[in-house]
Image (cartoon, rainbow, N blue to C red; front, side, top):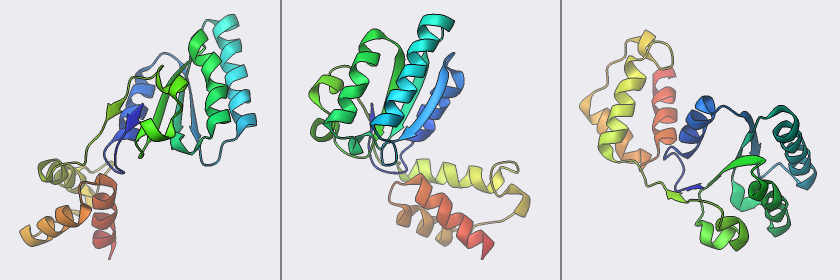
Length: 169
C-alpha cells in the first residue's frame, strides 16, 4: 500500500513495479470501479492463476474511495494469492482501508519531494528530448526555477504541469 501526498511518486513506482513483474497487470481507479468490475477482474485472475499459472498484479488507485464491501471483495483473492495487490492513496490508510485488508498490506509512506528532488526533475524535463522538453532547448532563469520549485510544494506533477504551461506559452 503506497500512501502519501499527490505528486510524490506512488503511481510512478507502482507502474515501474508492474513493468518488471511477471504477471498480468490490471489497473483500476476506485473512483470509477464498482463491485462488478472488481469481481470480473478477480475471476479472470483466479482463472489465470489456476489454469495458466500466471498471477495478476492489480493496481488500485485511490483505494480509499472503496467502501467496506468493495474492500472485502478483494480479501479472498489476496488471501489465496490469486492477485498481487498494490493500493495507492493520498489518505491515511488507517482511517480508510478496513483492518482485514490493511493487515495484508505492507504500507509505504511517501513524503513530499524536496527542493533538490524537484530541481533534478526540472533539469531532466528540460533536457530529455524524448519524454521532456529537450527539443525546445529552453533555459530557465534561476528566479523562474526557484519560483516553480517553491510553488510545486513537493508535488512533481504540479511542477511538470507548470513547466509545460510556461514552455508552451
